[in-house]
Length: 255
Image (cartoon, rainbow, N blue to C red; front, top):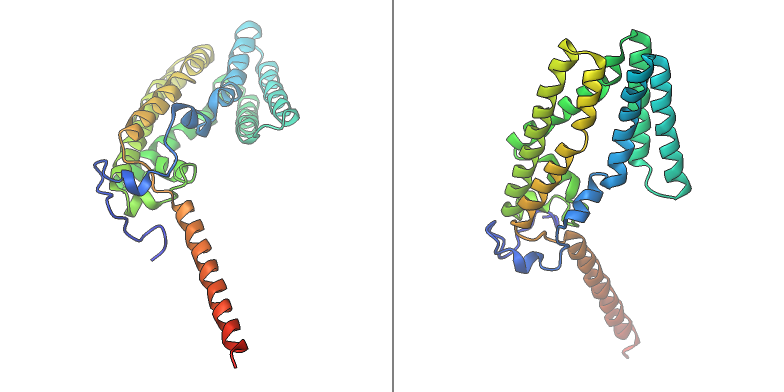
């Protein structure tokens, strides 16, 4: 068995896994916010869309609005680079805004600036729901390494499996609801309406999902720190090796 699969005494999914996971890190709202991008990540992904709809509302110029939004995304990424901060969310923002800008300029329809992001959100919502249905919740896959439990929650900590499943359902349902609002506006509304509604729905759903994830995990058993277990196993194996070498050395020196 691997350290992810061997059973741990006392983990019954109702909170009695405290001894097995007492040394593991506890979930905090701040840790969750950072895991999903934090405030800065929200800015990187939301403000360029705001700039696009603002410029388009005033100038009615798709090219100008797209260039302004893309330029701001690049500046945000460069600011992170100068500060030596993580670039994952900044570059994903640049990539997303760049695709949206190309869609809008090539089609001549400002609504298409938002289409790639909307399709991504819908696809992510479906992925969350499907992963929850098959009991391999994506939130657990994302957060497990950050909690030093990796995938141990699948076989050794049923309480956390249940919590991750609930959290994943929450993300899927909230994002599906967001898509249910945006797509009708995309098909039957105008670009300005779509833009302002999309900006308004940028941060609140994310905050709701992070909050629900925090609530579910706060009530779950603590994580099993499999990283510490593996480090302890490696240290024990090294100690056994040294002991064998010591015994072998003494045997060679005995008359």
